[in-house]
Image 1 (cartoon, rainbow, N blue to C red):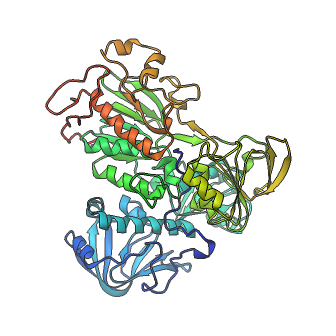
Image 2 (cartoon, one colour):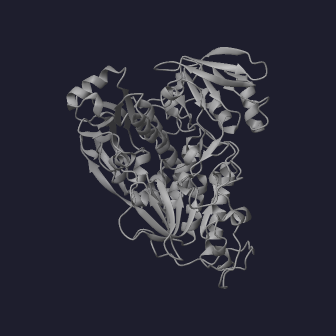
Image 3 (cartoon, rainbow, N blue to C red):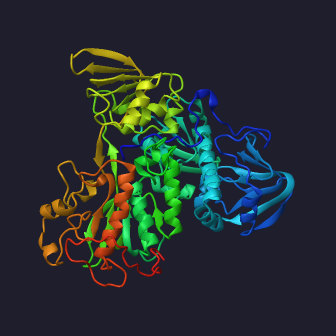
Length: 609
C-alpha cells in the first residue's frame, strides 16, 4: 500500500454514469473512446511493418480465438475485423469492428495470456502480422507507439471487465473461497462475471447443465467447455495464462518478493544492471498502487497516471531487461542455504535460492472490526475501490472510512459513480494525514460529505449493506447512516507473518533495517564475521533487504517506495562484492557510501534458464 493511491480507474473508465463506453458498435467509424480504439498513423504502421509480414484474409478467417493464447499482433490494412464474444454460439455478439489503421488486441496480448474474445474477418482484406516479442520490444523502445498501444490495451481490458466478459465465477457471497477467487480476478484485472449462488437465477441453470451441486461451488466456468471446482488462485492463473515459475535452475543473483512500486523498481534496476532477477507475487502486480484510479503527485506525471497503467509500464520495463515475474506465489519461509544463498520457500512447496533477497511485500489495509461486518466483506464491504466495485454504486450512497490519501482518492473516484459519498474520519481534520491537493478536491466536491470525529460502530444488513451505525466520538451521539457499500482505508498491516521467526520486526510487524535491525539482531556475530555493519536498507540478515511499505518507518508514497526499490539494488551490489566505482574491486568499507554507479556484472546467467 502507498498513501497516495487506491482505486483504479484512470483507465478507460468514465467518471459519470451516463458516459459508460461500450464495444457495441456496428462500425469502425464511430468516435474513439478514451484512447481505446486509436487509428495508427502511416509512420507507426510502417514502423511495425519493418518487423512483420502481410497476410491476406477472407471472410470468416479467425485471427484470434477465445480461450487460446494470442500468438501475434494484427494491424488491419484493408477490409474489416470483428471482435466477438461467444463466437459460433447462439449467444454470439459483436463487441467491436475494426477497420483500416486499427489494431487487434487488449492487455493480455502483451503478456501471452489467453484471449477473452475471438477476432474474425468480417470483410476480405489484408492484415499486418507482427510477433508478440517484436511488439513488446517496440512498445518498450518507441515511446510514442508504446503510449498508443499500451493505453489502448489497458482501456480495452477495462471495457471487457466492465462488461462481464470472460469466465464466470459461481459461488455464494458468504463463501470465503468465492471471495478469494473474486479478489484474485479483480486485482489481476481479469475479465469475468460473478454469479451469486444466493440470488442469481442463472446459477441454478448452470449447476444443472454441468451436473454439480451447490456444495461443490465455487465454480469457474469458461466458454461452457472448461469447469474448475473451487480452484486455487494458481489453477485460475494457469487457465488464463498468467506467468508461472518456469522449471529448471532456480538459483539467481536476486529474488524480489512482492511486485508493488518498490518490487518493480528493484526489478528494473537489478535486471538492467546485469543481475539475474526474478520477482514473485502472491496476488497481483502493482500491489495496492495498482488499484489506484489516479496518482496525481507522482513526479513526471503532471496530469496523473492510473495505478494500472503505471504497473503495466513497469512490468513491461522489467521484462524488457530480462526480469522474470511469477504469480501467484505466496512466500512461506526464509532460510540460509549456505554462506552464499538464501532460500525462499512458498506455500505450494516450491522454493527459490538467490544470493540476495529484496523484501517488497508492502502492506494491506487493516480490517475494520465492528459487529455485522464480516458477512458483508467482499460483497458490500471492500478494502479497495476498483472499477469493479464502483460500477455497483451507481444508484445508492456509499461510505468511505479513513483520513489518508488512499481514502481521499477513493472518495473522489467513487463520487464519479455514486450519487453520494460519505467520508467518515475519526480525527478532527483532513489535513493531518491527507495531501493538500486532495483535501481541496474532497471539500469542494458536491457529492461528498465529510463527517469528522465519526466512527462506525455497527454494520446493518443481511445480504447487502443497508445502514451504518456511527458515533460522534466527541459527543457520544449515535446516528444511522444509509449506505449500500462501505470502503475501508484505515491504516496498514505488513505482509510479514512468514518472517516472524527469521527476521527482526518492529512492534507492528514491519521489517527493521539499518542500525535498528543490527541492534535487534538475535545473532550479532553474523555481522562481526563480515567485517561490516548493516547497510541502510539491509535487514537483520546479511544479504536480505527491505524496501517500500513493508519497511519500518518508511514513507507511504509510491515515489518513495520506488526510490527505495532502486536504492536496495545499490546495496545488493555491495553485498555481492561489486565495486563501488568502475575499475575497483571488493566491497566498500563498512558504513561507506558512494554515489558512483557500481561496476556491472556481465549479463548471461538467466534467472530461470
